[in-house]
Image 1 (spheres, helix red, strand yellow):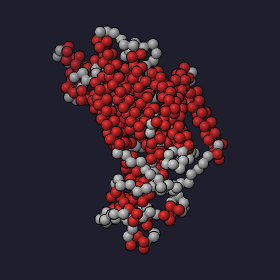
Image 2: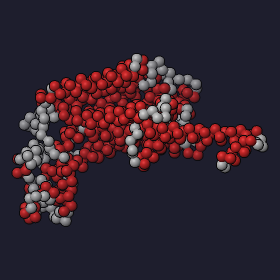
Image 3: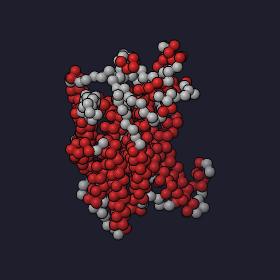
Image 4: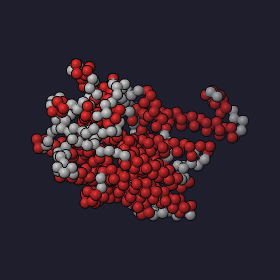
Length: 504
């Protein structure tokens, strides 16, 4: 039916119900046009006015539609309030979002670099008996205290700074942030001569591609029975201008097929110009092997953050439906303080726990934390059915256990990946942690959207209805527990079969 038919039907209604139905359809069409216009505005705002590819823009537009989850609806309400203040032709919101993008780039680039740069100030040398020397012990303590201080900074920003922005002035809040960053840059520049600057070890990916290319050229060759017949690269290791490395790795039997990249042929001896792409030293091959061993463990950490992110999302939603005398999001500050306490405890007992065992503790306690949340949510739903509200203190145990999990896995992962990563990837190794956090949050958001659509199919209420008391957030928690337990089992299998890199 076209627009003229609509107008005609409205002029000569047959029944009152038909008139109301036609009016409703007109109102629905107007709302749809408003929603589409608002969505286009939101898309332009979020993308910052940059000419992103159309496929990417379509994906963001779909995200703007979102699922009918409580936190998604809240996000859309905030977006409508923001868009209501935007006038056509006013590019200030676009400039603001571009500056937010710059903040994201700066934070993402500095976080991992600061961690690895500070870790380089400690000595890696053993004490001569094959045990970790005092430098390594101090480095392990550094990773834990870094995470504790970072969490305290986030807690301060999420409480005091938010209060300043909400009660005083947003500009003052941003000004405080800017002043702190400026002071940090000045201090770093003033103390730069005190730091140890290690020589550049070359691009990590160049070495990976060289091994893969050399392997592809020699894939049909037969490996020698004696590994000492492989190219060791003695002369290259001694010349820091050719290969500025100070660690040489021992040969390992895992992924032994890659050793073909170190087989010496007559062609390799006759051609020197492109030898690095034809013949790779065993240390370079072992670096690729180490990377391949780390990737599966890193993926389990990404899945872990599906459970960890509940503390900032669904746990908070639980708190909003309880009988509370404090804001529900304040419990995240309690978790942050508990993380710092756990780190202090870890520094007293960490010598008994290796980084892998610490990560395993984080995986196990994450499953326990979400399991406790499922029990609490089930209890809350039963009380809601009796028209009662559960006290927010019942949610405190899940935050306590999640704090133990967060401190254990995060500190263990930072130390493990820095210690085990190839030397050319030391600087990027700590970035693995932040990437795993991002992937875990992405997996969680997609999982929530999938579960919401599946459980609400066929007109059913679903697990995430508009009214939380009618849903089953506890079922979702049980699903997350199952995923976390399976992920923990995979991690245990990988940890048991992991062979640490051995330095000659």
